[in-house]
Image (cartoon, rainbow, N blue to C red; front, side):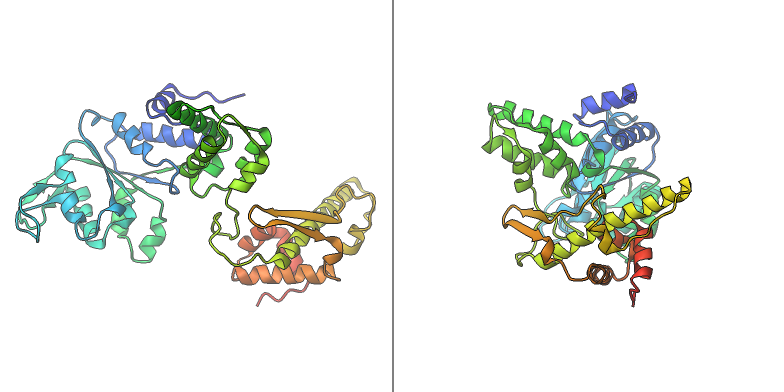
Length: 403
């Protein structure tokens, strides 16, 4: 049964053209509406391209300051040498080029709301000035000794982990606590499930309407491929992705194969984009494939054992080698597998290419993964596609030296 969406959340979505019904997105919108009438500072966090810019607008529109000014400032786009002047203003002659006095954003937005995007990019000196505004509502223009007052609400946003920035000495701890009185976490696109379908359809329809072309559609298999992709660029990346198809494939139904060929391949743990021109390491790919298959077999064997123990049936132990010859196994290991990279063709991995000893191969793969992640068990288990419990058991059973 679909959840009932509150009327004010529906109104906010319609007003700001927000597409999606994922629970995480709806909670973030509801949280912004709830805090809007209360004059507290808000910190909006989320990955780049996830749509953080909508939430300050919701807070401003649903608050008491909606008839006053709303100013959005991208702190990362203003040079360090002029950021203080932009925010707080300056007096004539305070620096070279200051031919007249100028009001800053904090003076211009008096009574309204200022949205500080990429707030983590502010220099430390500017952070000190901002802290004073938050604590007392006072500021000084550059080159002035006269204290001025302002009555504004500050909403900040960042895609940076500010706790780590504080630990690294790049962000003031007192400012962090002042800004994060209320925190709103915007979900990334990968965690929004079927919202990807809704957004893709909306972007395709918008493109067709704007440029008077035939709209594209996506097959069900194409949507499934899009749902499992990580989308590191979030909604912004999806929009660009759909518009490329809308331009070159107007009126067509986009297939799964076309989607896979157009998506950047995830070649590392930290990025879904191809950033290296080095040739692919097919040996490593083959080894990882075998380890994933072997891990699946082991998990099934463990499940069988637990079921047999619960039902009081005798359990017949089996080795890794017997898994591959057991004709009754519901998940037989295929004699070959295909790994496709759009720009590199098809690589065929055959069973006879596997190492002589699968246990030795598994030991090597786990050891190599542990080394890549500095013995971080959680990251190693994630890379190998096995549970943390299974990884610990394999380390013990295979006698792997974690050092």
